[in-house]
Length: 241
Image (cartoon, rainbow, N blue to C red):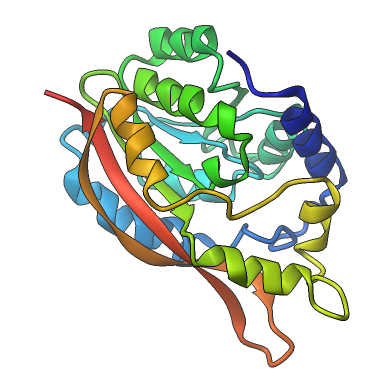
């Protein structure tokens, strides 16, 4: 099963229109506020940190390049060519590799696993704006990449992020400038219930090793100058033994 054509087209349109300016995308905050805190939770649970690391849903590659400073072999993957092209442009030194990947398509994740072997996986904010029917196949693909030895860090906006996003979307003066393009392309953020994420992971044959809550920082600000931060739920998972 591959992801829906509507979902693919929405993201292709979004990334085709997005500028290369740092911080121009709503969720593309600087790594010190995003992947950095996540690694503080993930790295102590890695049994084999030397495995290749896959940034699943890498978007512009901002977090991928940060990860490539800390792991020997990092691959940023995304569903749409516009995102992969942008990530490559932003990484002229080639700190990481980038490739198209429909992680919900079984043969594609199997092919990448055959190339890389077992991997550690970082996935931030991918499931919450997927079509519901795409979520289990996507997590199944993540499990394929993890294999027997890897581990996965998955973080999603929590249920309590939904009313925050709705309030922003319905402001009388319109949504914030960086959220507006997301909504215009029909991407609906913040739509995964808190109990769904661990269920998807377990159904894919993985065990939840650790979980918790953490603020998810965005690049957008409120009129009073405070940064918009969304509550999020995270977990670390590995193959069930």
